[in-house]
Image (cartoon, rainbow, N blue to C red; front, side, top):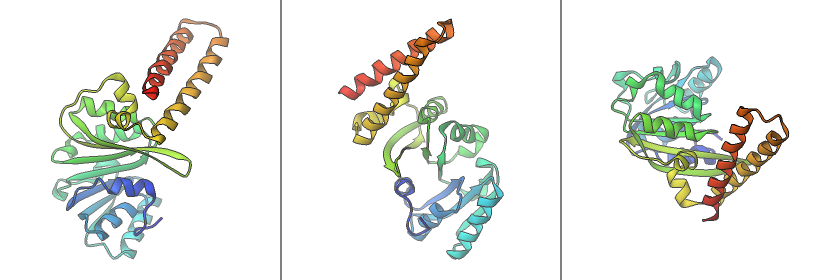
Length: 232
Protein backbone atom coordinates (compact mmCIF):
# COMPACT_ATOMS: atom_id res chain seq x y z
CA UNK A 1 0.00 0.00 0.00
CA UNK A 2 1.13 3.54 -0.76
CA UNK A 3 -0.24 6.99 -1.64
CA UNK A 4 -1.12 5.85 -5.18
CA UNK A 5 -2.53 2.42 -4.34
CA UNK A 6 -4.57 2.14 -1.16
CA UNK A 7 -5.70 -1.01 0.59
CA UNK A 8 -9.21 -2.21 -0.22
CA UNK A 9 -10.34 -0.89 3.16
CA UNK A 10 -8.98 2.64 2.70
CA UNK A 11 -10.06 2.74 -0.93
CA UNK A 12 -13.62 2.13 0.28
CA UNK A 13 -13.25 4.97 2.80
CA UNK A 14 -11.96 7.27 0.03
CA UNK A 15 -15.04 6.62 -2.12
CA UNK A 16 -17.22 8.40 0.43
CA UNK A 17 -15.16 11.61 0.59
CA UNK A 18 -17.17 14.33 -1.20
CA UNK A 19 -15.68 16.01 -4.25
CA UNK A 20 -13.63 19.12 -3.37
CA UNK A 21 -13.75 18.36 0.35
CA UNK A 22 -11.31 19.84 2.83
CA UNK A 23 -10.48 16.65 4.65
CA UNK A 24 -9.04 15.87 8.07
CA UNK A 25 -7.71 12.34 8.45
CA UNK A 26 -7.35 11.58 12.15
CA UNK A 27 -4.90 8.84 13.06
CA UNK A 28 -3.41 9.24 9.59
CA UNK A 29 -0.39 6.96 10.10
CA UNK A 30 1.62 7.32 6.84
CA UNK A 31 -0.86 9.89 5.44
CA UNK A 32 -1.57 7.57 2.51
CA UNK A 33 -5.28 8.43 2.49
CA UNK A 34 -4.96 12.26 2.38
CA UNK A 35 -2.17 11.99 -0.21
CA UNK A 36 -4.36 9.75 -2.36
CA UNK A 37 -7.34 12.09 -2.04
CA UNK A 38 -5.34 15.16 -3.05
CA UNK A 39 -3.47 13.37 -5.85
CA UNK A 40 -6.78 12.26 -7.34
CA UNK A 41 -8.33 15.74 -7.07
CA UNK A 42 -11.01 14.52 -4.68
CA UNK A 43 -9.90 16.70 -1.76
CA UNK A 44 -8.82 20.31 -2.26
CA UNK A 45 -6.58 20.15 0.79
CA UNK A 46 -6.08 17.99 3.86
CA UNK A 47 -4.99 17.79 7.48
CA UNK A 48 -3.21 14.62 8.57
CA UNK A 49 -3.45 14.28 12.34
CA UNK A 50 -1.34 11.92 14.45
CA UNK A 51 -0.99 11.63 18.22
CA UNK A 52 2.09 9.37 18.15
CA UNK A 53 5.46 10.81 17.17
CA UNK A 54 6.63 7.88 14.99
CA UNK A 55 3.58 7.82 12.69
CA UNK A 56 3.57 11.66 12.68
CA UNK A 57 7.14 11.65 11.33
CA UNK A 58 6.19 8.97 8.77
CA UNK A 59 3.29 11.15 7.62
CA UNK A 60 5.57 14.18 7.29
CA UNK A 61 8.03 12.16 5.18
CA UNK A 62 5.26 10.77 2.95
CA UNK A 63 3.76 14.22 2.29
CA UNK A 64 7.20 15.59 1.41
CA UNK A 65 7.96 12.61 -0.83
CA UNK A 66 4.67 13.10 -2.68
CA UNK A 67 5.43 16.85 -3.01
CA UNK A 68 2.13 17.80 -1.37
CA UNK A 69 3.39 20.08 1.42
CA UNK A 70 1.39 23.03 0.05
CA UNK A 71 -1.87 21.08 0.20
CA UNK A 72 -1.48 18.71 3.16
CA UNK A 73 -0.64 19.86 6.68
CA UNK A 74 0.59 17.22 9.13
CA UNK A 75 -0.03 17.93 12.81
CA UNK A 76 1.02 16.15 15.99
CA UNK A 77 -2.11 16.39 18.14
CA UNK A 78 -4.65 14.37 20.11
CA UNK A 79 -7.58 13.46 17.88
CA UNK A 80 -9.71 16.37 16.66
CA UNK A 81 -7.30 18.83 18.30
CA UNK A 82 -5.39 18.52 15.01
CA UNK A 83 -8.13 20.60 13.37
CA UNK A 84 -8.09 24.39 13.64
CA UNK A 85 -11.07 26.67 12.86
CA UNK A 86 -9.29 28.37 9.96
CA UNK A 87 -8.78 25.01 8.24
CA UNK A 88 -12.41 25.02 7.13
CA UNK A 89 -12.61 21.22 7.31
CA UNK A 90 -15.75 19.84 5.65
CA UNK A 91 -15.17 16.09 6.09
CA UNK A 92 -13.37 13.92 8.64
CA UNK A 93 -12.07 10.39 8.22
CA UNK A 94 -11.10 8.16 11.14
CA UNK A 95 -10.06 4.65 10.17
CA UNK A 96 -8.38 1.61 11.69
CA UNK A 97 -9.36 2.01 15.35
CA UNK A 98 -11.89 0.40 17.66
CA UNK A 99 -15.39 1.86 17.73
CA UNK A 100 -15.11 3.01 21.37
CA UNK A 101 -11.87 4.90 20.64
CA UNK A 102 -13.41 6.60 17.60
CA UNK A 103 -16.43 7.64 19.71
CA UNK A 104 -14.10 8.99 22.42
CA UNK A 105 -12.21 11.05 19.82
CA UNK A 106 -15.48 12.52 18.55
CA UNK A 107 -16.72 13.28 22.08
CA UNK A 108 -13.52 14.98 23.22
CA UNK A 109 -13.75 18.07 20.98
CA UNK A 110 -17.42 18.38 19.90
CA UNK A 111 -16.95 22.04 18.93
CA UNK A 112 -14.69 20.96 16.05
CA UNK A 113 -17.60 19.12 14.41
CA UNK A 114 -19.59 22.33 13.84
CA UNK A 115 -19.58 22.98 10.12
CA UNK A 116 -18.36 19.48 9.25
CA UNK A 117 -20.62 18.02 6.57
CA UNK A 118 -19.58 14.37 6.66
CA UNK A 119 -17.87 11.80 8.88
CA UNK A 120 -16.44 8.64 7.31
CA UNK A 121 -15.62 6.24 10.12
CA UNK A 122 -14.07 2.79 9.84
CA UNK A 123 -14.06 0.94 13.15
CA UNK A 124 -12.16 -2.34 13.32
CA UNK A 125 -14.49 -3.58 16.07
CA UNK A 126 -17.62 -2.49 17.97
CA UNK A 127 -19.26 -0.33 15.31
CA UNK A 128 -22.35 -0.31 17.52
CA UNK A 129 -20.71 2.26 19.82
CA UNK A 130 -20.43 4.71 16.92
CA UNK A 131 -24.09 4.24 16.01
CA UNK A 132 -25.00 4.95 19.63
CA UNK A 133 -22.83 8.09 19.56
CA UNK A 134 -24.52 9.21 16.34
CA UNK A 135 -27.98 8.81 17.88
CA UNK A 136 -27.02 10.88 20.91
CA UNK A 137 -25.29 13.64 18.95
CA UNK A 138 -27.64 14.31 16.01
CA UNK A 139 -25.77 12.53 13.24
CA UNK A 140 -27.53 10.19 10.81
CA UNK A 141 -26.17 7.21 8.89
CA UNK A 142 -26.43 7.80 5.14
CA UNK A 143 -24.53 4.69 4.07
CA UNK A 144 -22.61 1.70 5.39
CA UNK A 145 -20.21 -0.83 3.90
CA UNK A 146 -18.96 -4.15 5.21
CA UNK A 147 -15.94 -5.74 3.56
CA UNK A 148 -13.37 -8.45 4.05
CA UNK A 149 -9.63 -7.97 3.56
CA UNK A 150 -6.77 -10.22 4.69
CA UNK A 151 -9.20 -12.45 6.63
CA UNK A 152 -10.50 -9.49 8.63
CA UNK A 153 -13.94 -7.92 8.41
CA UNK A 154 -14.34 -4.14 8.48
CA UNK A 155 -17.32 -1.82 8.59
CA UNK A 156 -17.47 1.73 7.23
CA UNK A 157 -20.09 4.16 8.51
CA UNK A 158 -20.88 7.37 6.65
CA UNK A 159 -22.59 10.05 8.76
CA UNK A 160 -24.04 13.48 8.05
CA UNK A 161 -25.71 15.94 10.46
CA UNK A 162 -29.31 15.06 11.23
CA UNK A 163 -31.54 12.96 13.44
CA UNK A 164 -32.42 9.30 12.98
CA UNK A 165 -34.11 6.47 14.81
CA UNK A 166 -32.47 3.06 15.14
CA UNK A 167 -33.91 -0.04 16.78
CA UNK A 168 -31.76 -2.05 19.15
CA UNK A 169 -30.94 -4.56 16.41
CA UNK A 170 -30.16 -1.80 13.88
CA UNK A 171 -27.68 -0.29 16.33
CA UNK A 172 -25.91 -3.64 16.52
CA UNK A 173 -26.06 -4.78 12.90
CA UNK A 174 -26.32 -1.47 11.05
CA UNK A 175 -29.51 -0.26 9.33
CA UNK A 176 -28.02 -0.32 5.82
CA UNK A 177 -25.93 -3.46 6.28
CA UNK A 178 -28.93 -5.33 7.65
CA UNK A 179 -30.94 -4.48 4.54
CA UNK A 180 -28.13 -5.34 2.11
CA UNK A 181 -27.51 -8.66 3.89
CA UNK A 182 -24.27 -9.37 1.99
CA UNK A 183 -22.20 -12.55 2.19
CA UNK A 184 -19.63 -10.76 4.37
CA UNK A 185 -22.42 -9.58 6.69
CA UNK A 186 -23.78 -13.11 6.91
CA UNK A 187 -20.31 -14.50 7.62
CA UNK A 188 -19.53 -11.95 10.35
CA UNK A 189 -22.72 -12.48 12.31
CA UNK A 190 -22.76 -16.26 11.87
CA UNK A 191 -19.31 -16.25 13.47
CA UNK A 192 -20.53 -13.95 16.26
CA UNK A 193 -23.48 -16.25 17.01
CA UNK A 194 -21.11 -19.22 17.25
CA UNK A 195 -18.89 -17.30 19.69
CA UNK A 196 -21.86 -16.22 21.80
CA UNK A 197 -23.01 -19.84 21.89
CA UNK A 198 -19.60 -21.00 23.14
CA UNK A 199 -19.56 -18.34 25.86
CA UNK A 200 -23.09 -19.26 26.91
CA UNK A 201 -22.17 -22.95 27.19
CA UNK A 202 -19.25 -22.05 29.45
CA UNK A 203 -21.49 -19.83 31.59
CA UNK A 204 -24.02 -22.62 32.05
CA UNK A 205 -21.26 -24.76 33.60
CA UNK A 206 -20.33 -22.01 36.07
CA UNK A 207 -21.97 -21.23 39.40
CA UNK A 208 -25.32 -19.64 38.59
CA UNK A 209 -24.96 -16.26 40.28
CA UNK A 210 -27.44 -13.50 39.34
CA UNK A 211 -24.76 -11.91 37.12
CA UNK A 212 -24.09 -15.19 35.30
CA UNK A 213 -27.80 -15.84 34.80
CA UNK A 214 -28.32 -12.30 33.45
CA UNK A 215 -25.37 -12.59 31.03
CA UNK A 216 -26.57 -15.97 29.80
CA UNK A 217 -30.04 -14.55 29.16
CA UNK A 218 -28.55 -11.57 27.30
CA UNK A 219 -26.55 -13.90 25.05
CA UNK A 220 -29.61 -16.08 24.41
CA UNK A 221 -31.51 -12.95 23.35
CA UNK A 222 -28.71 -11.90 20.98
CA UNK A 223 -28.41 -15.36 19.46
CA UNK A 224 -32.18 -15.55 18.83
CA UNK A 225 -32.53 -11.98 17.52
CA UNK A 226 -29.52 -11.95 15.19
CA UNK A 227 -30.28 -15.51 14.10
CA UNK A 228 -33.75 -14.40 13.03
CA UNK A 229 -32.25 -11.60 10.90
CA UNK A 230 -29.86 -14.03 9.19
CA UNK A 231 -32.74 -16.31 8.20
CA UNK A 232 -34.51 -13.57 6.24
